[in-house]
Amino acid sequence: MRKILSPLILFVFWAIGAATAQQPQQLNYQAIARNSNGQPLVGGAHITMRFTIHNNSATGNIVFTETQTGITNTFGLVSTKIGAISNLNVANWSNGAKYLQVEMDPNGGSNFMDMGTSQLVSVPYALFAGNSEPGTIGATGFRGVQGITGPMGPVGPTGLPGTNGSNGNRGATGAAGATGVTGNNGVTGATGIAGLTGTTGVGAPGVTGATGGFAINIGDLYGGGIVVDVWDSAGVQHGLIASLTDISNNSIWGNVIHEVGPTAESFSNGKANTYAAVAQPGDTTGAALLCRAYNAGGYTDWYLPAITELKQCYKSAAAVNRNLGDINGFQPTEYWSSTEYRNDQDPLAYWAWYFHFSLGWPYADVKDIDLNVRAVRRF
Image (cartoon, rainbow, N blue to C red; front, side):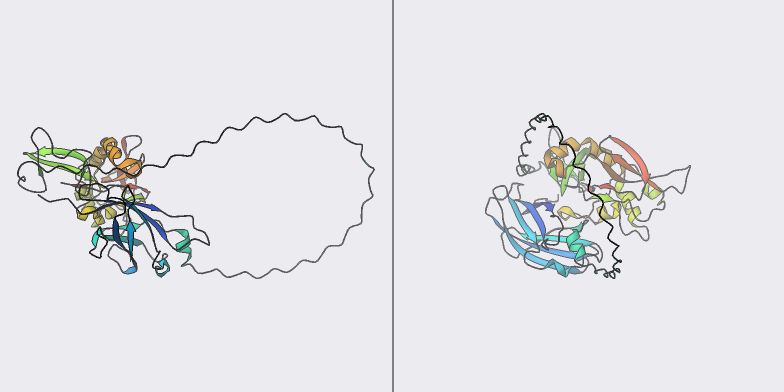
């Protein structure tokens, strides 16, 4: 059976300040460092991180690289700024998509491990504007002729003094300002999964079930993500795993909007739908392609879930959000599925199914609207 333990687990949070003329050419970066048991590293631990920005794809040309050393606080949180050592101006932000690769050494050396590559889906205005060409300055308009000064009017009689106005009522005392929100505590890591009982089941990637129930349950961190469904097949446990966060919150279904056909219409086999969608000539962006390129935890079999798999994610949202929190958990919004919608009344209406996590119901719409995306894989 495949081992899933790694020396360090990083949860990444991004924060980009307002883009002004005085804005530093830097990006804030925060991560929670955990050991192989899922516990945050002790405060004061030195870790080394290497940041690499690729152009146009996760394996594209390198346009920026930088190595930094961070120190964890008491919650295992390490904070730094990308661009604090090297100049981010070397990257042309207006020339294609940018992908950030993060590598690290938990011992503070140079024995780096690849933690994954993700697209920077939003470029700060200050960085984008730094690569823009200045516009030309318009010519100064002609000054108009000064008009003739008009004659002074006669002085009017002095008006009678007005009566004193009554004192106004005193305004009501304003309400006291609200107490500022207390900052959130650092995320508590989940307890590592106990060693499995029994021998490995025939035909990986199943997991042999423990006596009296499943060894892995919904809400457990496993296989590069979090478990949203489990089932037994001939004594071997299988399950569905969702990514630890949304991989996009504004992605179209795909830029090839014509109908893929029956190979992308399965209600339960999201992997087959995803492979059929990305195989279309000219498909260069969209939800299916993002999931196919996702490689969290070192796994390369992530895909865009079918509509019934996405419904199972919705049913497990409470357990997922209890573990991951409101920021990384499922959001009360619409998520794309990989299942195409065939409209027999209008064959040219190229639609696909999505699931509304606020209303709890599936819908269909055109493929070029922006929705959230969550990747899944099976074990």
